[in-house]
Length: 281
Ligand code: SAH
Image 1 (tube, rainbow, N blue to C red):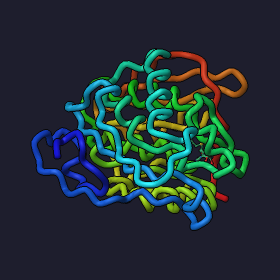
Image 2: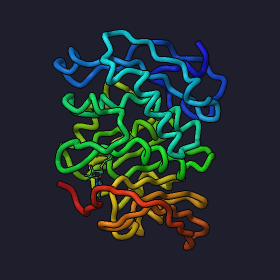
Image 3: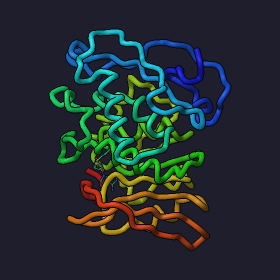
């Protein structure tokens, strides 16, 4: 087995920039969330891309299909989604490989799973959405900037999809959700994937996670009128934060920490996210 064919679970140290470590075995890992879903869903076997060794998405080895696969959630459909994301402008091969690796349909209600690989945000309950694959890839690409990510923070776990993608490209990932049932849903969704380098927290992400920081990347999956100062303070020097900013009209903002009390700010493309809200429910 090559590095490109690694499977969950992996020790944290083997996820990023390890290059030449041994593959940890090939046990089948991905199980859907419930027995009912189990019966209906294709069970993929994600492979785990390794930073700096990712090839173009089209060269990523194909997971072995172990159960009947619906054509709507098949690996081919997921590859097609990644190709569309690449066409839309995401160029980072590691990010594209990560998108190809994570079975998005396992993060959605079964009734919506057939739409998992169209490029759209879709409802996950509690008036929240799973983000559009393009924007997930774009934000991670901007945050990574071709570099190595040691520790990253996501605000707004939702169903856990973007957190799983982040865990493919960073050594350690922390993700915070303020809605308890969604925090629990993400845990259920992620458990079968056994992502070893991901920690989920229930809390107000506007406060960040100072006890785990500083972070060399922070992504907000919900839009505020401004980026909370607490988050800017939790960036490492050179660290990059990507956030949607605005109310009805929103744009992506990329903020880089350039000094102890200095940050640079770039305004990028338009986007549309659910609102960032304070407190927990
Ligand atoms: N990351 C998700 C997208 C989730 S949608 C994905 O993988 O597709 C945005 C999420 O941000 C919602 O679940 C919402 O509850 C959450 N959110 C909004 N404000 C927050 C805050 N202050 N702290 C933590 N989560 C927050």
